Image (tube, rainbow, N blue to C red; front, side):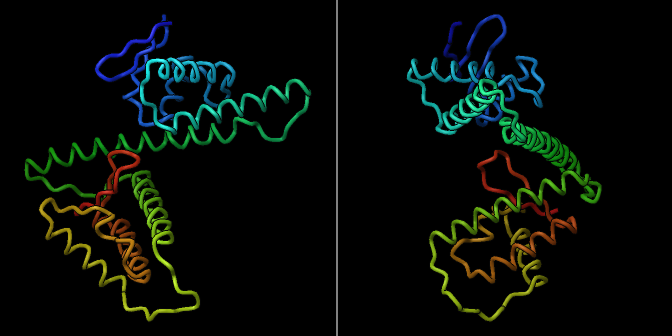
Length: 250
């Protein structure tokens, strides 16, 4: 098996495998590619074979002194752990209630859903831009339930990250209850006004909900944003998994 470096991408070549590592957002996407390339059933992964392919790829890259994100090594360790658990079960002829591959399969399925939803949103964004250039109004009420669920899921993940960041950077007084000075309808108007005032009628999630703001304000703003999404008055998008969420006005 040979390894070629082309335009900053890694390509492993034999009769079956060609991989451009830069084309993958992370280890789950690379793993899905290997599974598909090997024509495996995602619900019945040959963990021994897929681990060998994955680890061999990383080893070849290390020999070429190619930088590899730490998350790829974490996945390699996880694959080897699953492989060892399955080998141990075979050697001892023990039947386990849970398949060691179960969590990995769940992650892969969830990631596939994310990728499909991201493609749908990207296509809708292209259609939206095309129609707007012709002066045609798009009715967001025609959005699918799946897209709504995806947007809310994105928002939930962003909120959890924000709260974790706030917990790390700020000391929250114990036993102190602040007077609630924020109302959802007022914050909804505030968000819409910010969108109207922005050049592209869009704002970043991190610019709207700042971790140094009072918790009462953050909670109310989040609920206001959630309400606006459900009412189809705004929508959100995320280009890549680690990118900040963009809030757009309709």
